[in-house]
Length: 186
Image (cartoon, rainbow, N blue to C red; front, side, top):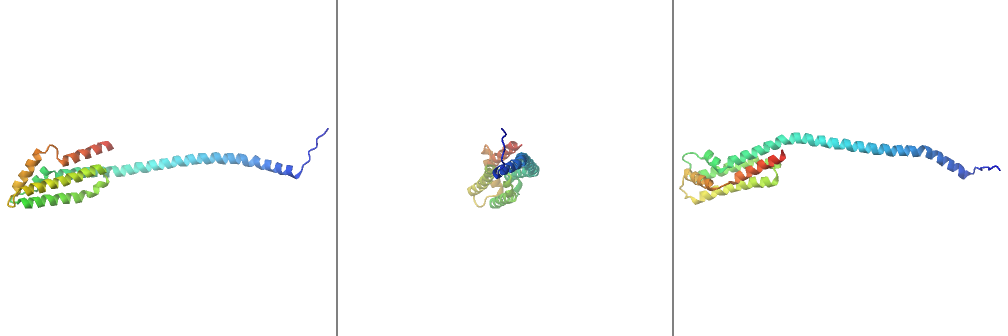
């Protein structure tokens, strides 16, 4: 008995579909493979580009950040009451003149360095501001305790005596915080 296959139109369609699948299925598998390899490669390249960007930024920001820390420590040293009084006092000044001069110098120094807060953590910047505010309070408080005819020498001595009694000044606290932050960064 011989089996005769009768090709009907539906079997010809199946034959064509199988013939198409012979070419498209391997091409589809290759396409999916290439897609995942290419995707992985592009993600890797993107990570490399981001790392290079961060590295370049770090190289640019680090010196600026170091300069900001240096400037803030210099600011704090300049407004340290002992240093400030010694630097600003001159013979013949009245207490009121010395007070005005001290407050003007503190304000000027602060205004000059205000932009450095971009590079200093918020909590450390608050300590710096607090040191400035406490320094101003001490100057004003000492000045208020003297009479209107007092000399600048009396005010400077009063301030220096008060500073001598304080274990740790607010400027020293802020300087220490800056040093700690800097040590954490490096």
